[in-house]
Length: 116
Length: 114
Image (cartoon, rainbow over all chains, first blue to last red; front, side, top):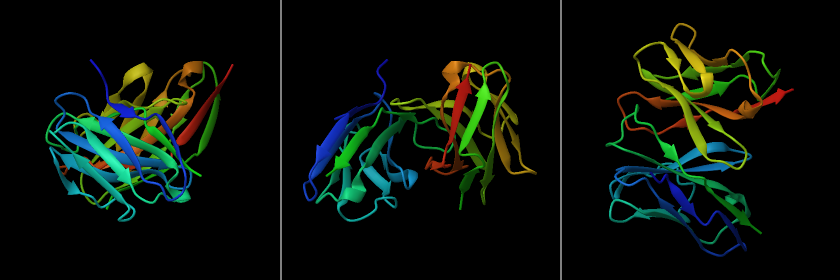
C-alpha cells in the first residue's frame, strides 16, 4: 500500500515568508509525528498528534511554528516569517495504533526547505 | 531522560567484511531501541527494533543488534558488507511504556569500498 507522502518535496522561500508543509500518513494510522533534520542539530522531534489533538508540542522551536491535523489524517506544518535557520529537511512519520514506545514509525521522504 | 550516543560518525569497510556500528544509550526507564537507515535522498527505513523480548534482534538485509543492559549498548552488526549498505545509520531510543517520541543519535555514515 501507499506509504507516508509529503509535499512539496522541495521548497525554496524568501526570509520572512510563510510556508506550509503537508503530510499524508498511511491510511488508518492514528499517530503522526513531525521531525526536523538539519546539519547542526541532527534529527529532532517537533510535535506528535494522536488523532487530531497534539498532546506533545514540546519540540516546536518557536511560536512561529504551528501544526494541525484534520480528520485524523492529513497534517500541515506551518512556519511563519521564515528565518534562514529554519532551513532543514522536515520529516513526517505515522504509526498504526495509539502510540506506544514499541510501535514502528514509518517515515515519509521529507520536505527540503531552503530559506534564502 | 533518554539519550543516544553513536560512537563513530564515519565507518569505512571493504565489501565482504563485517560491519560494526556502535551505539550506547541512556534511559531512566526500560527503553525501546531502534536502528534506522537513510540512503541518500531517501526516507528513513526501520532496520530492526528491540522491545524487551529477545536481546538479540534480527532485522532486514542481514543486520542484527544485541541489547546489553550491563553495557547500555545496542551495537549494529552485519557479517558481510554489501555495496548497497552504504548509507547513514541512526540509533534511536524511545521511552518504554510511553508514547513513541523518538530520540535520535547523531548518525553514523557507512562507506563500503570494493
